[in-house]
Length: 334
Ligand SMILES: *Cc1c(COP(=O)(O)O)cnc(C)c1O
Image (cartoon, rainbow, N blue to C red; front, side, top):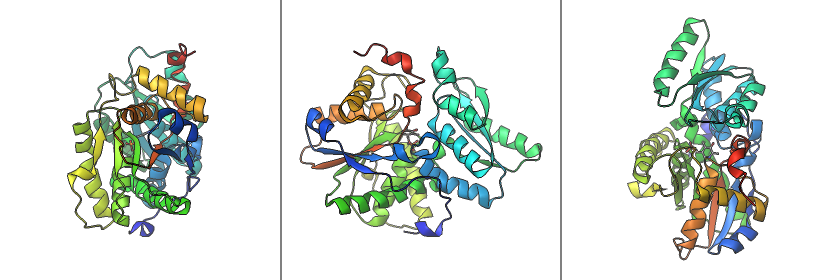
C-alpha cells in the first residue's frame, strides 16, 4: 500500500484499543463482539473524523492554507473535530452548519458539539434545512479568498479519497491488532454516513489482500443509495493508493433498516441500544450514528444474520458529545 508516501500530520492517539465486550456479547447472544475504540482518538473529544483530518490537514498545510472551512449539521462531530484540528494547527476555522433538525431545543442548539466548536473559536455560519451545502461552501470559499485568506475546503464528513486514507490506515491497524490477539475478524460493523469510513476500510482491507467484510449501517439513506455513495469513493480511494485489484460491487455491504425517520431523528431502538451499551459495558454511544448502528447489530444478531461467525468488530466512530444535545430524549429511561 502506498499509504506511507502520502503526507499526514499526527492528530490522533493511535492505535486506538480493540477490546472485547463480554457482557454485551452475553446479553445479546451470537458471536463474540469486540469494539474498536475510535471514540478514543483524543482530539477535542475524539471520533472517526480525526483519522481523516490527519490526511486532510496535511494537504491544507502543504497548500499553504491559513484557513479551513467545512460543512455539516448543527451537531456535526466532523465540524467539531475540524475545529479542534484547526485550533491545534493554528488555522482559522469556518463551519457552515445546516439546521437539519426542525423544532430543536436549546440543548441541541447550544450544547454538545456546538459548545466545543465555540471553545475552539470556530466561526459558525448557519443555513436552513435543505440548503445545497456544497454550493454554499463554494461561495464561502470564494468570499474568503476575496478577503485575502488562503482557504482549504474540507468536504462534508471529510469524505474525499484523501480523507478516506485515514480508514485505509485503520484497516492496517485492525489487522495487526487481531493478529496479536490471535483472532480472525469475520465482520466489521459501523455507522455509515458520508461514506469515507466505509470506503477507506474496504480499500484498506483490499490493499492488504485480506477478506474482511465491512457492513455499513446507514444513518441517513437507504441501503441502495448508501452503496451508490460508497462505490465511487471506494474506486477513487483505491486509485489514490495505486491499487488496481478490481473490487466487485458486492464488497460494499449496506443495511438501511435502522435509519428511522431520517438523519439525526431518534428511534426507540437507538435509545435502547445506547442505554444497553452504557449499562453493560460503560460505553458511551451516540444518538445519531453509533446508537443506530448498535441497534442494527443487536437486531441482526437476534435474527440470526451472523450465522457461523465467531468474531465481529463494532467500530465505535465516536459522537458521544452529542448525548448532551439530545438529553431530552433520554428523559423517559428508567
Ligand atoms: C461522521 C460519523 C460517522 C460516519 O462516518 P462517515 O465516514 O461519514 O460515513 C459515524 N459515526 C460518527 C459518530 C460520526 O461522527
